[in-house]
Length: 366
Ligand SMILES: [Zn+2]
Ligand SMILES: [Zn+2]
Image 1: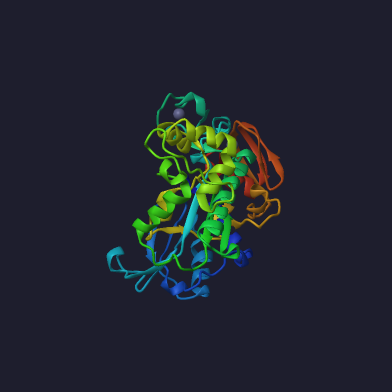
Image 2 (image 1 turned 90 degrees about the horizontal axis):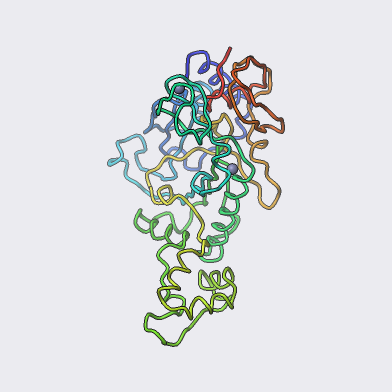
Protein backbone atom coordinates (compact mmCIF):
# COMPACT_ATOMS: atom_id res chain seq x y z
CA UNK A 1 0.00 0.00 0.00
CA UNK A 2 1.49 3.37 -0.99
CA UNK A 3 1.56 6.39 1.30
CA UNK A 4 -1.58 8.06 -0.09
CA UNK A 5 -3.58 4.83 0.18
CA UNK A 6 -2.34 4.18 3.71
CA UNK A 7 -3.24 7.76 4.75
CA UNK A 8 -6.77 7.40 3.38
CA UNK A 9 -7.34 4.02 5.07
CA UNK A 10 -5.78 5.02 8.41
CA UNK A 11 -7.80 8.27 8.47
CA UNK A 12 -11.02 6.35 7.83
CA UNK A 13 -10.20 3.82 10.59
CA UNK A 14 -9.34 6.60 13.06
CA UNK A 15 -12.74 8.21 12.42
CA UNK A 16 -14.42 4.83 12.87
CA UNK A 17 -12.89 4.35 16.32
CA UNK A 18 -13.82 7.94 17.27
CA UNK A 19 -17.44 7.64 16.10
CA UNK A 20 -18.13 4.01 16.96
CA UNK A 21 -16.25 3.29 20.19
CA UNK A 22 -19.53 1.83 21.50
CA UNK A 23 -19.11 -0.95 18.89
CA UNK A 24 -15.96 -2.21 20.63
CA UNK A 25 -16.86 -4.06 23.83
CA UNK A 26 -14.15 -3.97 26.49
CA UNK A 27 -12.79 -7.51 26.97
CA UNK A 28 -13.48 -8.83 30.46
CA UNK A 29 -10.42 -9.12 32.70
CA UNK A 30 -8.77 -6.72 30.23
CA UNK A 31 -5.53 -6.38 32.19
CA UNK A 32 -4.96 -10.16 31.97
CA UNK A 33 -5.15 -10.20 28.15
CA UNK A 34 -2.46 -9.97 25.54
CA UNK A 35 -3.18 -7.56 22.68
CA UNK A 36 -1.57 -7.14 19.30
CA UNK A 37 -2.12 -4.97 16.26
CA UNK A 38 -0.95 -4.10 12.78
CA UNK A 39 -0.87 -0.66 11.22
CA UNK A 40 -1.58 -0.44 7.48
CA UNK A 41 -1.46 -4.23 7.26
CA UNK A 42 2.22 -4.12 8.30
CA UNK A 43 4.03 -6.37 10.73
CA UNK A 44 2.38 -7.48 13.94
CA UNK A 45 3.14 -5.74 17.23
CA UNK A 46 2.10 -8.01 20.10
CA UNK A 47 2.66 -8.80 23.81
CA UNK A 48 0.82 -5.56 24.61
CA UNK A 49 -1.46 -4.98 27.56
CA UNK A 50 -4.05 -2.32 28.43
CA UNK A 51 -5.03 -1.63 31.99
CA UNK A 52 -8.59 -0.55 31.23
CA UNK A 53 -11.14 0.51 28.61
CA UNK A 54 -9.72 4.00 28.42
CA UNK A 55 -6.18 2.83 27.68
CA UNK A 56 -7.49 0.56 24.93
CA UNK A 57 -9.52 3.39 23.41
CA UNK A 58 -6.53 5.75 23.44
CA UNK A 59 -4.57 3.15 21.45
CA UNK A 60 -7.40 2.56 18.95
CA UNK A 61 -7.94 6.24 18.17
CA UNK A 62 -4.29 7.23 18.44
CA UNK A 63 -2.82 4.39 16.35
CA UNK A 64 -5.82 3.57 14.11
CA UNK A 65 -4.54 0.02 13.54
CA UNK A 66 -5.71 -1.85 10.45
CA UNK A 67 -6.20 -4.94 12.62
CA UNK A 68 -6.48 -5.46 16.39
CA UNK A 69 -6.27 -8.76 18.22
CA UNK A 70 -6.88 -9.80 21.81
CA UNK A 71 -6.02 -13.11 23.46
CA UNK A 72 -8.84 -15.43 24.45
CA UNK A 73 -6.41 -16.50 27.17
CA UNK A 74 -5.76 -14.78 30.46
CA UNK A 75 -2.20 -14.54 31.73
CA UNK A 76 -0.58 -13.48 34.94
CA UNK A 77 1.96 -11.45 32.91
CA UNK A 78 0.47 -10.72 29.46
CA UNK A 79 3.35 -8.54 28.25
CA UNK A 80 6.07 -11.12 28.96
CA UNK A 81 7.56 -13.49 26.38
CA UNK A 82 5.20 -16.37 25.59
CA UNK A 83 6.93 -18.89 27.85
CA UNK A 84 6.93 -16.50 30.80
CA UNK A 85 3.38 -15.18 30.55
CA UNK A 86 2.04 -17.76 33.06
CA UNK A 87 -1.11 -18.95 31.28
CA UNK A 88 -4.22 -19.02 33.47
CA UNK A 89 -7.06 -20.13 31.17
CA UNK A 90 -8.57 -19.46 27.74
CA UNK A 91 -12.19 -19.26 26.64
CA UNK A 92 -13.24 -21.35 23.65
CA UNK A 93 -13.13 -19.78 20.20
CA UNK A 94 -14.07 -21.10 16.78
CA UNK A 95 -13.41 -19.86 13.25
CA UNK A 96 -15.46 -20.83 10.22
CA UNK A 97 -14.12 -19.43 6.96
CA UNK A 98 -15.91 -19.49 3.61
CA UNK A 99 -12.65 -20.15 1.78
CA UNK A 100 -12.30 -23.51 3.59
CA UNK A 101 -15.73 -24.79 2.53
CA UNK A 102 -14.84 -25.74 -1.06
CA UNK A 103 -17.80 -23.84 -2.50
CA UNK A 104 -18.27 -23.83 -6.29
CA UNK A 105 -19.01 -20.07 -6.31
CA UNK A 106 -15.47 -19.19 -5.11
CA UNK A 107 -13.70 -19.10 -8.45
CA UNK A 108 -16.31 -16.72 -9.85
CA UNK A 109 -15.62 -14.01 -7.27
CA UNK A 110 -11.92 -14.58 -6.64
CA UNK A 111 -9.53 -12.15 -8.29
CA UNK A 112 -5.74 -12.21 -8.58
CA UNK A 113 -3.87 -9.01 -7.71
CA UNK A 114 -0.34 -8.86 -9.14
CA UNK A 115 2.47 -8.00 -6.70
CA UNK A 116 4.64 -6.77 -9.60
CA UNK A 117 2.34 -4.56 -11.69
CA UNK A 118 -0.75 -4.23 -9.41
CA UNK A 119 -3.10 -5.22 -12.26
CA UNK A 120 -5.93 -7.66 -11.59
CA UNK A 121 -6.70 -10.93 -13.38
CA UNK A 122 -9.44 -13.56 -13.08
CA UNK A 123 -8.63 -16.41 -10.66
CA UNK A 124 -8.84 -18.94 -13.50
CA UNK A 125 -5.81 -17.32 -15.20
CA UNK A 126 -3.55 -18.64 -12.39
CA UNK A 127 -1.03 -15.81 -12.97
CA UNK A 128 -1.01 -12.12 -13.88
CA UNK A 129 -2.66 -11.77 -17.30
CA UNK A 130 -0.90 -8.41 -17.87
CA UNK A 131 2.77 -9.18 -17.05
CA UNK A 132 2.64 -13.02 -16.65
CA UNK A 133 4.07 -12.76 -13.11
CA UNK A 134 3.35 -15.69 -10.78
CA UNK A 135 3.52 -13.35 -7.78
CA UNK A 136 -0.21 -12.91 -7.30
CA UNK A 137 -2.46 -12.67 -4.26
CA UNK A 138 -5.96 -14.12 -4.32
CA UNK A 139 -8.58 -11.60 -3.20
CA UNK A 140 -12.23 -12.37 -2.94
CA UNK A 141 -15.32 -10.20 -3.31
CA UNK A 142 -18.30 -10.75 -1.04
CA UNK A 143 -20.80 -13.38 -2.05
CA UNK A 144 -24.11 -14.05 -0.32
CA UNK A 145 -23.79 -17.79 -1.03
CA UNK A 146 -20.49 -17.92 0.87
CA UNK A 147 -22.01 -16.10 3.84
CA UNK A 148 -25.09 -18.38 3.85
CA UNK A 149 -22.95 -21.55 3.66
CA UNK A 150 -20.72 -20.32 6.50
CA UNK A 151 -23.74 -19.51 8.66
CA UNK A 152 -25.04 -23.04 8.06
CA UNK A 153 -21.78 -24.36 9.57
CA UNK A 154 -22.19 -21.93 12.48
CA UNK A 155 -25.67 -23.37 13.12
CA UNK A 156 -24.23 -26.93 13.11
CA UNK A 157 -21.53 -25.87 15.57
CA UNK A 158 -24.08 -24.20 17.81
CA UNK A 159 -26.27 -27.30 17.91
CA UNK A 160 -23.28 -29.48 18.90
CA UNK A 161 -22.15 -27.05 21.60
CA UNK A 162 -25.61 -26.87 23.14
CA UNK A 163 -26.96 -30.41 22.64
CA UNK A 164 -23.78 -32.47 23.05
CA UNK A 165 -21.51 -30.33 25.25
CA UNK A 166 -24.25 -28.86 27.43
CA UNK A 167 -23.43 -25.21 26.82
CA UNK A 168 -25.99 -22.54 27.44
CA UNK A 169 -27.18 -21.09 24.13
CA UNK A 170 -26.89 -17.57 25.55
CA UNK A 171 -23.17 -18.11 26.25
CA UNK A 172 -22.42 -18.52 22.52
CA UNK A 173 -21.69 -15.34 20.56
CA UNK A 174 -21.38 -15.29 16.80
CA UNK A 175 -19.53 -12.57 14.86
CA UNK A 176 -18.98 -11.80 11.20
CA UNK A 177 -15.20 -11.42 10.92
CA UNK A 178 -15.44 -8.42 8.58
CA UNK A 179 -14.03 -10.33 5.62
CA UNK A 180 -15.22 -13.84 4.79
CA UNK A 181 -15.38 -15.72 8.04
CA UNK A 182 -17.50 -16.09 11.11
CA UNK A 183 -16.09 -16.27 14.61
CA UNK A 184 -17.77 -17.95 17.56
CA UNK A 185 -16.80 -16.86 21.07
CA UNK A 186 -17.99 -18.83 24.09
CA UNK A 187 -18.34 -17.07 27.44
CA UNK A 188 -15.93 -18.18 30.17
CA UNK A 189 -16.95 -21.60 31.44
CA UNK A 190 -16.00 -25.12 32.34
CA UNK A 191 -13.88 -25.68 29.20
CA UNK A 192 -11.45 -22.81 29.84
CA UNK A 193 -8.85 -24.88 31.68
CA UNK A 194 -8.47 -27.35 28.78
CA UNK A 195 -5.05 -27.59 27.19
CA UNK A 196 -4.27 -27.70 23.52
CA UNK A 197 -4.46 -31.51 23.23
CA UNK A 198 -7.91 -31.70 24.84
CA UNK A 199 -9.11 -28.90 22.57
CA UNK A 200 -7.86 -30.87 19.57
CA UNK A 201 -10.06 -33.77 20.70
CA UNK A 202 -12.96 -31.38 21.09
CA UNK A 203 -12.33 -30.03 17.57
CA UNK A 204 -12.25 -33.58 16.17
CA UNK A 205 -15.57 -34.30 17.86
CA UNK A 206 -17.16 -31.14 16.46
CA UNK A 207 -15.82 -31.89 12.97
CA UNK A 208 -17.06 -35.53 13.21
CA UNK A 209 -13.51 -36.69 12.61
CA UNK A 210 -12.30 -40.16 13.50
CA UNK A 211 -15.77 -41.69 13.80
CA UNK A 212 -15.67 -45.51 13.72
CA UNK A 213 -18.47 -47.92 12.64
CA UNK A 214 -18.36 -49.73 16.01
CA UNK A 215 -19.69 -46.60 17.72
CA UNK A 216 -22.76 -46.85 15.46
CA UNK A 217 -23.39 -50.51 16.14
CA UNK A 218 -21.64 -51.83 13.03
CA UNK A 219 -19.10 -54.49 14.16
CA UNK A 220 -16.10 -55.57 12.12
CA UNK A 221 -17.02 -59.28 12.09
CA UNK A 222 -19.10 -60.10 8.98
CA UNK A 223 -22.63 -61.22 9.80
CA UNK A 224 -22.44 -59.98 13.42
CA UNK A 225 -25.61 -58.46 14.82
CA UNK A 226 -26.08 -54.75 14.02
CA UNK A 227 -26.99 -52.31 16.77
CA UNK A 228 -27.80 -49.16 14.81
CA UNK A 229 -28.83 -46.12 16.86
CA UNK A 230 -32.24 -44.51 16.61
CA UNK A 231 -32.89 -40.97 15.36
CA UNK A 232 -33.51 -39.70 18.89
CA UNK A 233 -30.26 -41.04 20.34
CA UNK A 234 -28.08 -38.27 21.84
CA UNK A 235 -25.03 -36.83 20.09
CA UNK A 236 -23.65 -38.03 16.79
CA UNK A 237 -25.45 -41.37 16.96
CA UNK A 238 -28.86 -39.81 16.54
CA UNK A 239 -27.58 -36.99 14.32
CA UNK A 240 -26.07 -39.48 11.86
CA UNK A 241 -29.31 -41.44 11.55
CA UNK A 242 -31.37 -38.25 11.20
CA UNK A 243 -29.01 -37.04 8.49
CA UNK A 244 -28.86 -40.29 6.48
CA UNK A 245 -32.46 -41.33 7.12
CA UNK A 246 -33.30 -44.53 9.02
CA UNK A 247 -33.65 -46.76 5.94
CA UNK A 248 -30.47 -45.58 4.12
CA UNK A 249 -28.56 -45.85 7.43
CA UNK A 250 -29.68 -49.47 7.78
CA UNK A 251 -28.73 -50.17 4.15
CA UNK A 252 -25.25 -48.65 4.68
CA UNK A 253 -24.77 -50.73 7.84
CA UNK A 254 -25.75 -53.96 6.06
CA UNK A 255 -23.11 -53.23 3.40
CA UNK A 256 -20.46 -54.06 6.01
CA UNK A 257 -17.88 -52.41 8.22
CA UNK A 258 -15.64 -51.03 5.43
CA UNK A 259 -18.56 -49.60 3.45
CA UNK A 260 -20.06 -48.07 6.56
CA UNK A 261 -16.72 -46.43 7.35
CA UNK A 262 -16.92 -44.76 3.92
CA UNK A 263 -20.46 -43.61 4.69
CA UNK A 264 -19.21 -42.01 7.91
CA UNK A 265 -16.41 -40.30 5.98
CA UNK A 266 -18.73 -38.79 3.40
CA UNK A 267 -21.65 -37.95 5.72
CA UNK A 268 -20.65 -34.25 5.79
CA UNK A 269 -22.37 -33.70 9.12
CA UNK A 270 -19.47 -32.29 11.14
CA UNK A 271 -19.16 -28.52 11.57
CA UNK A 272 -16.30 -27.29 9.40
CA UNK A 273 -14.34 -25.24 11.90
CA UNK A 274 -10.66 -24.34 11.56
CA UNK A 275 -9.15 -26.69 14.18
CA UNK A 276 -5.95 -24.62 14.47
CA UNK A 277 -7.86 -21.68 15.91
CA UNK A 278 -9.65 -23.78 18.52
CA UNK A 279 -6.56 -25.69 19.63
CA UNK A 280 -4.20 -22.69 19.88
CA UNK A 281 -4.47 -21.56 23.49
CA UNK A 282 -2.00 -18.68 23.02
CA UNK A 283 -3.69 -17.08 20.02
CA UNK A 284 -4.50 -13.42 19.72
CA UNK A 285 -7.85 -13.30 17.95
CA UNK A 286 -9.52 -10.48 16.01
CA UNK A 287 -11.26 -8.26 18.54
CA UNK A 288 -15.06 -7.83 18.35
CA UNK A 289 -16.00 -4.42 16.97
CA UNK A 290 -12.58 -3.85 15.41
CA UNK A 291 -11.91 -3.10 11.75
CA UNK A 292 -10.69 -5.95 9.55
CA UNK A 293 -7.74 -4.62 7.53
CA UNK A 294 -8.47 -7.01 4.66
CA UNK A 295 -11.72 -5.15 3.93
CA UNK A 296 -12.25 -2.08 6.14
CA UNK A 297 -15.40 -3.77 7.43
CA UNK A 298 -15.96 -4.26 11.16
CA UNK A 299 -16.18 -7.53 13.09
CA UNK A 300 -19.81 -7.30 14.17
CA UNK A 301 -22.16 -9.54 16.17
CA UNK A 302 -24.60 -11.72 14.24
CA UNK A 303 -27.97 -11.43 15.96
CA UNK A 304 -29.81 -14.61 16.81
CA UNK A 305 -32.57 -15.78 14.53
CA UNK A 306 -33.00 -12.58 12.53
CA UNK A 307 -31.88 -12.09 8.95
CA UNK A 308 -28.31 -10.86 8.81
CA UNK A 309 -26.77 -9.04 5.86
CA UNK A 310 -23.05 -9.26 6.63
CA UNK A 311 -22.02 -6.69 4.02
CA UNK A 312 -24.44 -4.04 5.27
CA UNK A 313 -24.19 -4.54 9.04
CA UNK A 314 -20.38 -4.49 9.05
CA UNK A 315 -20.07 -1.47 6.76
CA UNK A 316 -19.54 1.27 9.33
CA UNK A 317 -16.84 3.48 7.83
CA UNK A 318 -17.93 6.96 6.79
CA UNK A 319 -19.86 7.49 3.55
CA UNK A 320 -18.34 10.82 2.42
CA UNK A 321 -17.34 10.68 -1.26
CA UNK A 322 -13.65 10.31 -2.17
CA UNK A 323 -11.77 10.12 -5.48
CA UNK A 324 -10.06 6.88 -6.42
CA UNK A 325 -8.78 5.00 -9.44
CA UNK A 326 -10.46 1.59 -9.42
CA UNK A 327 -9.81 -1.65 -11.26
CA UNK A 328 -12.33 -4.23 -10.15
CA UNK A 329 -13.67 -6.70 -12.72
CA UNK A 330 -16.80 -7.68 -10.78
CA UNK A 331 -19.75 -5.85 -9.37
CA UNK A 332 -20.15 -6.03 -5.59
CA UNK A 333 -22.69 -4.88 -3.03
CA UNK A 334 -21.57 -3.07 0.09
CA UNK A 335 -23.64 -1.05 2.54
CA UNK A 336 -26.71 -1.81 0.44
CA UNK A 337 -25.26 -0.15 -2.70
CA UNK A 338 -23.85 -1.66 -5.86
CA UNK A 339 -20.31 -0.85 -7.01
CA UNK A 340 -18.36 -1.68 -10.13
CA UNK A 341 -17.22 -3.16 -12.29
CA UNK A 342 -14.39 -0.68 -12.90
CA UNK A 343 -11.64 -1.02 -15.49
CA UNK A 344 -8.76 1.25 -14.42
CA UNK A 345 -11.32 4.02 -14.04
CA UNK A 346 -11.16 7.35 -12.16
CA UNK A 347 -14.27 7.52 -10.05
CA UNK A 348 -15.76 8.97 -6.88
CA UNK A 349 -17.23 6.54 -4.32
CA UNK A 350 -18.26 6.44 -0.66
CA UNK A 351 -15.25 6.27 1.68
CA UNK A 352 -16.20 2.76 2.90
CA UNK A 353 -16.16 1.44 -0.68
CA UNK A 354 -12.86 3.20 -1.39
CA UNK A 355 -11.30 1.66 1.74
CA UNK A 356 -12.74 -1.72 0.83
CA UNK A 357 -11.25 -1.66 -2.68
CA UNK A 358 -7.90 -0.25 -1.52
CA UNK A 359 -7.60 -2.96 1.18
CA UNK A 360 -8.34 -5.62 -1.45
CA UNK A 361 -5.88 -4.10 -3.95
CA UNK A 362 -8.59 -3.04 -6.43
CA UNK A 363 -8.15 0.72 -6.11
CA UNK A 364 -5.73 3.53 -5.32
CA UNK A 365 -6.32 6.95 -3.77
CA UNK A 366 -6.23 9.82 -6.24
ZN1 LIG B 1 1.45 -8.21 -13.29
ZN1 LIG C 1 -19.24 -17.37 -2.88
